[in-house]
Length: 607
Image (cartoon, rainbow, N blue to C red; front, side, top):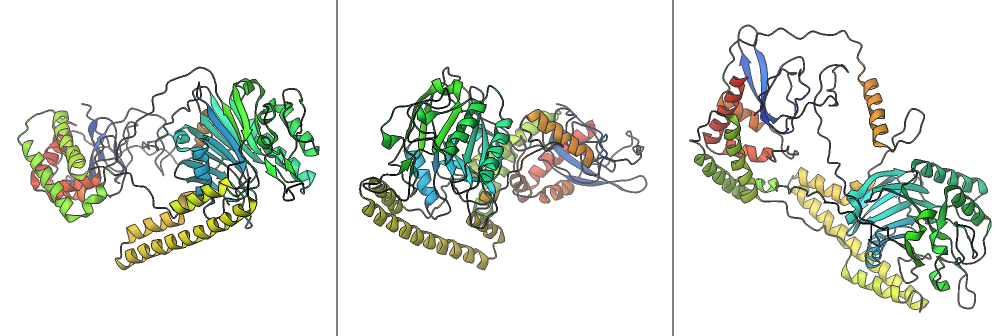
């Protein structure tokens, strides 16, 4: 076991790490770079010989020396550091070798309508699409939104009319493969995923319609060029979207095949130019299909005897990857009440690499301890376990802490239990989903029946949502009457769907260039922190202190008080012991407190 002794600022800081050590704090900052932890005990003791000095003691896990630890606020750049433990950045590579992955693009004509997202989620799951690019989403701002079967990354504007907007909808299994989300406005966004081959760039675009000026179109392609500059040679780059352009029938080098639809227009020439510059191919023009499997948009004037259907949505992929595209077609039967059809391609790369997905630790449901009966039972069980180790004699600190930690972990696992995965209640009903399913059957066969069912779907959506809202309001009123502010705020956050309003920023350098590479981002953050914490104050020498001076013994009351002031609902450290579990020691008899106090004093004396 490693024993560490160090002085630090007179304030309680988080503790955590890999080995149990004692940490003491004082006035002028910790002199060790390897000091830091997430979970620990804090207590104070008065030191004699002159003016009393307050010391704080922690049991924490020692971390490795890290010169890149973050600066403590108020300290000079070259001075002491305090370790910050970042959120988990674990990623899982997307399996693309020998697996057919379905990519698609679809203009959904707004997801702002009630029930539209649930309808889209069900259709994406039914068609087994893994990555779906969306145009005309009409959601304001940028962020992510989780659904039953996937995660939506969206990029919109600030227009109160809810115009335009793009998004990329991925299945839930690919969420951990996402390494970056870069919103570039209401018409272009970029999602980067880690695959078993290389990084994959998925760009979703929504070009201006034909009534917009050429200046607006060129602004769109300028933004699209900016997205392409972020990608690197050798990466898998796929551009999805509604380009409001007709490439038409007839082969044109590697850009388009001879299975297109219609006649090329001016906007089609601009799209072909963009594809030529970046060596992209329009995948849905290379595969022979019936015309009904080629068109992507129904004109408003389309009717029996006067068919007006165009191919204006495309999946653009690097030309050298076209050999891996197995098929490309549209699905006229897919239905989200849109005049566009989804364009779907099957991509299958060769070779296969097996990647072990990391296992996430289960969380203890410490909220159960609010129940007096469960808390009393857990306290009683912990007392019994502590009694069995009360007479455990060992001069070494490590074995003593191991048996104490086991007693705490057993109490968490056996008497408290883990958090059970609960399905969020949604207002979408099975009746509505069945109506949507039935509506889809009449999309291309009976337009009058389709419209009748569409009215029924919208009516049922309004009724279900109103009932759901009334139920949520009743729940919040009940919590308000109970003065339960914690759960009230939790319900409000769930109700307002706060996570959907999350804003994703873009990191740029001093020249306003978007940074994607991890090393470049770290370098930029380093520059920012150095500027932020630049301190021109003269060096202050540490206070003199006699380390051989006898120190007072830590008392049981100090340990008791230190445990009581621990905050609840905080993340655990590597020891996986919650603050709520530690407080059970205070509820029990003094056996646990004596064991802890003895442990603290042994560590302190060894220093």
